[in-house]
Image (cartoon, rainbow, N blue to C red):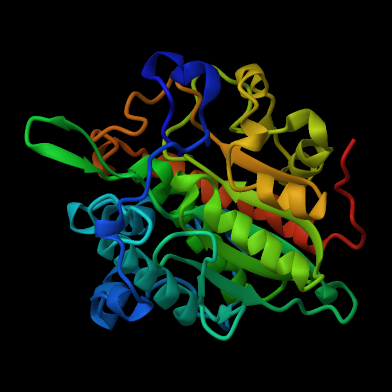
Length: 352
């Protein structure tokens, strides 16, 4: 989530993404991607991936228990650890997160979309990269269409000192969204029942002004891919309170996404949050560059509304405040909706 002009207007102009003002400090940026290949060993990564889960050759049918709190906690605990120093784009800490993402893709049958998983962004001073995976569709016709499932994996690095702590760990913002995408990749990689092709994209430099998603959206547009829709997950680590829906959808009235998602989920999975419209959150997260580049339904799913979480861009955004039972539900309750969208025989989601 992007840093705001003035703290006192935070609630007015920001939430699941707002204009980032924090400037890149050139002294913290590595000069080459080689310098960012830091140690997350294979053994380290294996400890974070539940190898007792279904194998890649086993059809997963029990969606209610596919993801579990323990799995999600392992991922978020690593991404939000002090060792990663707040995952600021272009730093050594975020490189360790990228290593884990890449390893997770490899282990779950998700191929690199480009020549490698790492797509160095062109609009950033220094070296920073999106991590982009690809799962080809299994339908001869529909596989030519794409669904992007994404989240940003960077955070702001440091924040106002509290005691001796200055690391803004970014557990909710946005290790939670990153873990959701990785779990969805694990599900689709295991089942391989997707008719459309899926791009799993973990974006860097969202906190610098949506730079990672802007770069990738423009790059994919230049390739002229047939993008059906973009589904973005942002700050889903704590549950909404006193709502009759599970998540809210930014740009709710822009398309029929909510209606379609809820139909496949067979529940009110997503709903309308009036303050999200008032704060124009549709334009403030990584869905928006895909909307601009492709003009296809591109939305963010979120459970953070400023009333249920007090640690936005603060050092208190730690693993301990994440609700891991809720997080597993985010994954499990999203699978049916996402699978329905990916496998629909026609493009059902349209802008209004």
